[in-house]
Image 1 (spheres, rainbow, N blue to C red):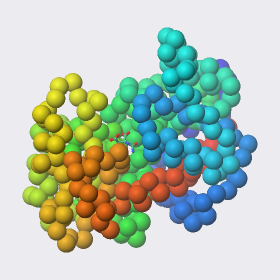
Image 2: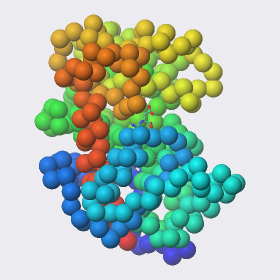
Image 3: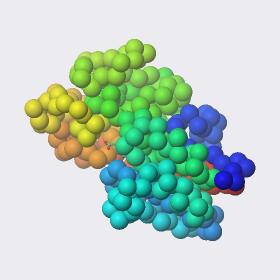
Length: 300
Ligand code: NCD
């Protein structure tokens, strides 16, 4: 297969240097103000989602269309993967139709990286198992930067919930310290990752006075081999982010979505001005526009 000269993929947050991330953020600032352009009007982007998605898939599609690109969403219910075709063959066949980028999500960690051998256009990872979700981490960091007007060095963030099974946590744990953020991991033992690099706590109340940001996570039950709680409600009794816990502290609240209401975050905290969940969604489009533009302009 002829290899495109400069094909760049976006598989993990480490594929972009710190300067490149700053460049992406500067582009996102412009896209948040201008909404659309036709820079990618002759490009075609395929989205390939083997796992459920509401936000990420529509965010990529809107981002691509705002840049003038055409988008083909492969409907996996009717695709040949249900006829026994291997994912490698599916991707090689799609690549043979010469798309300009493939955005993919799959439950297998590491799959987007291994598929880069079968394509000559950029692959953008929209989530692989519990491994990585780099565009989400970038939009999270961007939302934090925006809130603190760039002054984030030394700020502390508590990541709360099923950290062990979350690709959002996994990407953020690697990305945020690069920008000077201090991490505190808050989870029950069953959801705590092994690494000892970061401060750990079992309850948010133990650390809430020392943090500037709280990132709540959904419990990734689809990745659990055994049940750790009798019910999500029982988990929520200990880990739901409530007004009682936040009080009147000046703390930013984030969540990648989908939120399990009154389990991850209470109704009143979701409606609170400190909660920026919908701002994350808005910023997600601008960030994905910037990433698409960067990869498609440099690949080819
Ligand atoms: C996350 C994901 O898919 O990893 N969702 C998203 O992309 N916004 C988080 C989750 O599913 O809990």
